Picture 1: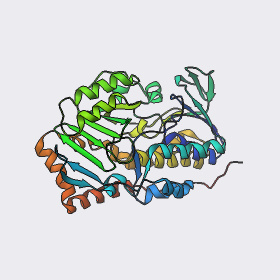
Picture 2 (picture 1 turned 120 degrees about the vertical axis):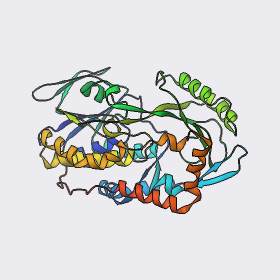
Picture 3 (picture 1 turned 90 degrees about the horizontal axis):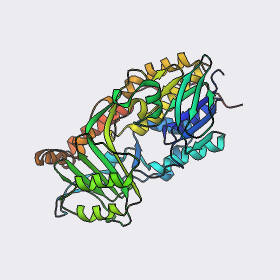
Picture 4 (picture 1 turned 90 degrees about the vertical axis):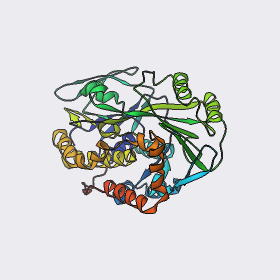
Length: 387
């Protein structure tokens, strides 16, 4: 097969999923990850509908995901006195299958590592120079190498996208909100609960991170690797908020694992440029939109399958990947989770809660998400195995 030596940037979900399929079709795969080790934290992720489950089944990991699933947990929406106002059911947040992000990441990593994929942690791409027969890649620490193809599966702040397509500001649209996750040194009860004041949400308990924040804000200038600075931003943003928030903020000060990021949307006219192609959030991300993991897994299946069907001809494969996947990924171009999670007025908070108090509204929303999640026909790609 042509173009058999592939570099993937990003070892979260999309990168290892693509590594699995490329390895199965006979490619030699290297995955480079900026973090010093596999990132095992984060919120639970979910899969919805026949399309997502079919990809998991074709990968041979559906039963493993079922075994590791959290089952989806109901979340109480409470007022400042802790009185229940509504219940967000597990089927809304957890889809058909919900699994901790770290467990899925470990599962994919273990499978691909055992299959012969190479992982390089603690390093990052610094330049991409396309030549007639490949891409010359330099790294922050490792020696330069030439690869046939390079894939950016490195998230909404993709380094590969910046190097190949231009500045992040040209492709990422800020949606007016931020979110934060923290694993706390103490628990705040077993029942998942969430509390709102206009423009702010705090949620505790349930699977994944111990606390989740979402809040409205103008654009913020901060170092995404300065944990203490990010903590100060959240603590300042939640000053004066009621319910259990002061105690939660005290615990945040002691948290070792803390993450803050914007709620943003990626808009790309093309997913590929030459021998470089984007996958997952790097190409069609929409933060907290509820489809990111599914899009990355299905996208990996389609991208690798098109390369196999084209016998490694990247120009043909990348074009078919874009043409066949853009309609499915369109859901990532719409919607903004920020106003839903952190409505801007008391009236809008009440309206959001009505969705969960009145069953017909919830059923309508679930039908819409199911339709979006299955809006693609999966091809049966060549049944090739690595020799």
